Amino acid sequence: MIKVENLRYAYDNGRVALDGVNLEIADGEFLAVIGTNGSGKSTLAKHFNALLKPTAGKVYVDGLDTSAEKNLWRVRETVGMVFQNPDNEIVAAIVEDDVAFGPENLGIEPAEIRRRVDLALETVGMTGYRNFSPSKLSGGQKQRIAIAGAVAMRTRVIVFDEPTAMLDPQGRREVLATIKNLHAQGLTVILITHFMDEAAAAQRVAVMEAGRILKAGTPREIFSDVAEMKRLGLDVPAAVELAERLRRRGVRLPADILTAQELAAVLKGK
Image 1 (cartoon, rainbow, N blue to C red):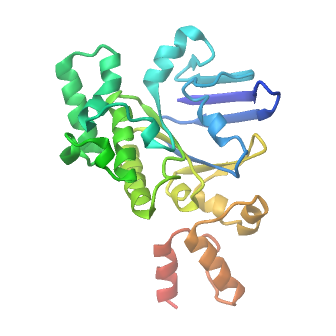
Image 2 (image 1 turned 135 degrees about the horizontal axis):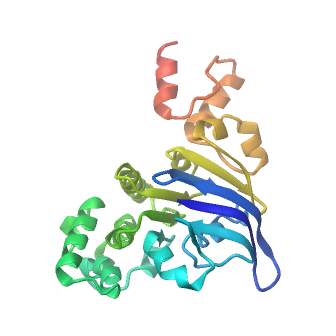
Image 3 (image 1 turned 180 degrees about the vertical axis):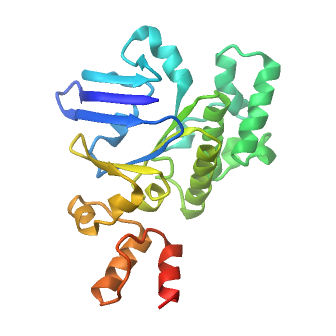
């Protein structure tokens, strides 16, 4: 679905944000990308739908070279993006009008737009809010409306660039549940996040450092090396952290505990 080959990107001031990134993302995959501030996560994300174009190297979306101007429309039809602040993405005064905005700009027939809006709102659990003003919604609800806008565009991939960074815990739970639901329906999901519990929900995790992919693997593989994650300045999921502290106190636990449910089950059996 997405292939990144020796991607390099430098800003106008000469700062190199990406330096030799190689990555493949399969159709239908759920990939989380983590790293400290300045590691290149968001810069990489913006290459997936050609918001940025490589300084060197290539990015392909479904075989299309994202740096070719003739492919721009098809790339952005394929890959949608949801950013940190939903207030910057909402453009209409009524929820259903906002979700319809993208399809309307594609020139889609009104009846088809209505079907898409209905399905998108149902998908994100916001059908009952279709006639609300977005200003009356919580942060998590606003973000779900932004996601509905991407769903209504019928993109096959959605890139989430730290979509829960500005939300409270309840809003984070709502948005993560929506993301997991979209993946379960077959969408390819790329989640840029600082929250390790969110990354643990992915099928695969890529760790970035200084503009490169340092390593990639399953969440269980990535988070099992707590010392390495700490060296990189990154946290680990709460259950992984607690399990590590218990081991240091002499409690014998499996090395690959990832979730609270797994930890609870092991402790209950002791």
